[in-house]
Image (cartoon, rainbow over all chains, first blue to last red; front, side, top):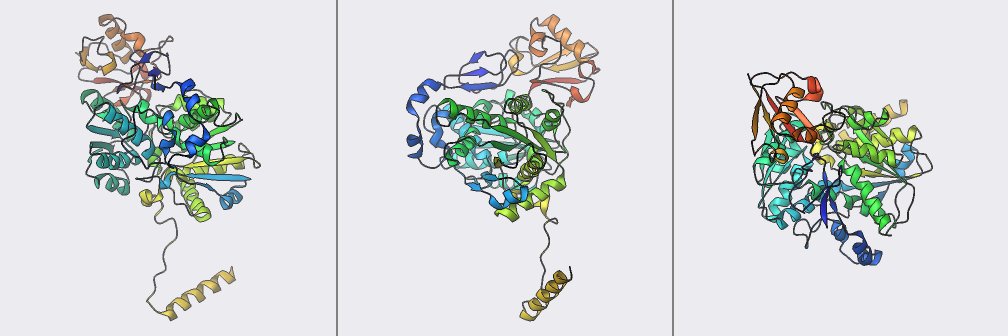
Length: 413
Length: 91
């Protein structure tokens, strides 16, 4: 790490807990010494390290050794042949962060970086504004690291995500409003209290953690950049960091230069970025979210401008899907690949289906879907839509008559 | 008659660390102009070359984003609170 730098005007700042340019409020980003990293980082070095996100630590913004989340990352990249056939594309991979450690979402990546860096900067209390997954990860990783945690969430969040924050002993504050209102309040709280807010004043470090998802995809594909990557968008940050990870590996000679496209997925009930992309705009209009994909329900996406730019630069597309299509996407992934994703995963699968059907992702190409969270956390969204159990007495006769009746009704069809 | 403007941390150097500033203007745009006359330099931090609110600045009147209201023409009155807040990452 060399410095923090404003993405808008280029002004540089010291590597402190600060996230916006004092001049134009542009987001600050970590600057690395790539020439130095290039001399010391190669395939065999990386492969000799433990299979976690920290095998790319030169490209993650901590000064010393990481102290939080050693085991995070290196989740499976699955070749999804059955789903590929169903969607009508030659080659399909699923990057499965639904089984990330310890809290079953990609947020463990960003949190382990943010909390390791927060400790380096001397913080004892950490906090976040969250749509759920981030709250879970901050609560769990803070508990394990002996840090005090305050997490702020919309009060109407899925029960699974609320319990998953409370159980670790974090202070969980439900805000009566949607995520954008939680965010606004947290910006004010962060300005007043001296805490490490992972996605406010720690954001430059936090956001870099997402790059590890892209590094892993490249390594797991045999050091190549996929032709197409479909990424769910909330603030748009993950999508921009996937591009950055691809660019960095190419720049460092760890992956060959190639033509790739990064596509963004949103739910129709909260689609400010996808709406702008489809209209060919480079700015978005904020919206009031109304979707079952609550983890993506950010109506004022902070990285929306940059996400639009990435899609433009990589000739990628965006699209959005209805709540029913989200549920269909969850079921399709589960039935084809045995992976139960949360609603954001249903969004990603649903949008991939649309992009393949419309030819924006050509049938003969290779695609990676980023599945970022676990379906066990959003049961409410699909309960009642995935069939029902048939209850019988513990009697073989009852089972056989059930089977018989079903066979007969199937035969009639 | 006064509305209050809540000044975000990065701009408080310009307002002598004043966190809450009273303004008598009748619109958000007027309030920004009024701040500029009292704290020269603050306007260019909030508005771009075209006079639009910078894209990483969110402005709220009583907790509602002015992009859902009338942008800089949004009226403000006695007792209203205007917040200026940088955009934040996802969660």
